[in-house]
Length: 201
Image (cartoon, rainbow, N blue to C red):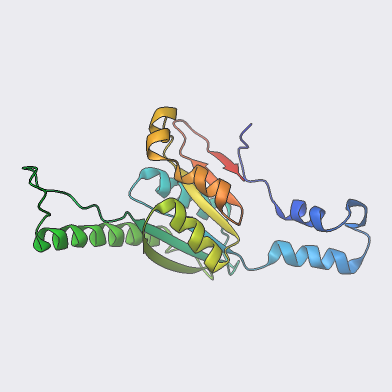
């Protein structure tokens, strides 16, 4: 069953660390639990050109990030690896350097456009630090690597909702991250009707 809203994970984490019978027995322990739930968090949101990632970011801003929380929001865009094309006539010649440079310039413009759009959604946040990063490579691996290197508390992803066959060929970024990231991953599905569907791992 997919929950309709994010279930707080802090009490569960605390339960793994402390015996359940001692959770509310000492003021010291209560204070530690409070500090865990109110600490400054670092949340990584993967963004791309799709509506799904825009919706995931909007959902995150409405449901996870609150004003005056002093959270840090990391907006990550991953440029796909450069694809080397052969000539259309099949001779095996590569595109000229000018064409390759034009393609690189286009990829950079797309990255800049996506990041700027995401930053506009975050413009009304107060006391929340917004960082942006643009990386190159396979999004599945890059997201997991960046999340681990930055020590983020959570990764937020949209999902394209591919069918089984298409997912088998293209791979699922959200599924890969859910299975391989070293932190909790929140997957937000853009609803076809009212309401939001989310899942955590």
